[in-house]
Image (cartoon, rainbow, N blue to C red; front, side, top):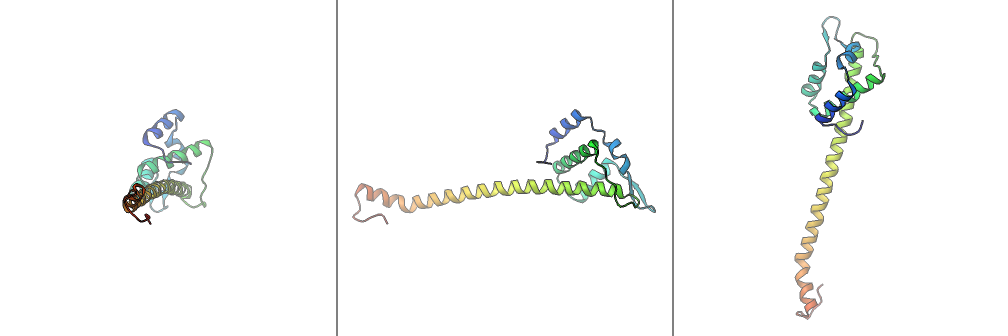
Amino acid sequence: MGRPKTQKEILEHMAADQIDFEELLEPYREGGTQQFPIRRTMGTIVDYLLNKKKYPKEIVGSAVLGVFLELKAGRRFHGDGTYGSPGRALVSYLRRQCDTLLHIQHEKEANAFADSLLFALREAQRLTFRARWGDRIRRWCMGLSGQEPW
């Protein structure tokens, strides 16, 4: 699946591939229960992922694009045979893809933070060494002190 795509990349990919989300979503529209049925749409799925599960919009867009590209390529979700289970299987798979992309994003952010922290620590160490020993070494090299720098 790779890295999360930007909104511009998602729109460009959708335009290039001519993805018809509504047509691909048709077998998975049944939702809810038989007593209280609902009709799944792209809006309700995206709303669920953004507002209920609190995924960032870039993550949701990338996951939706990736999953619907898989649907276009022939992937199917069958569920367990109960009412609305194919749609539940699709939404569960979307959530797993969002989790995967979020994990990748967090790893990259953590690595970037660790790199910047390591750089700051090395710089602090260098400055500390320079502050402690720079003057002593300079005096010793110039012969101004009768003692060795350490």
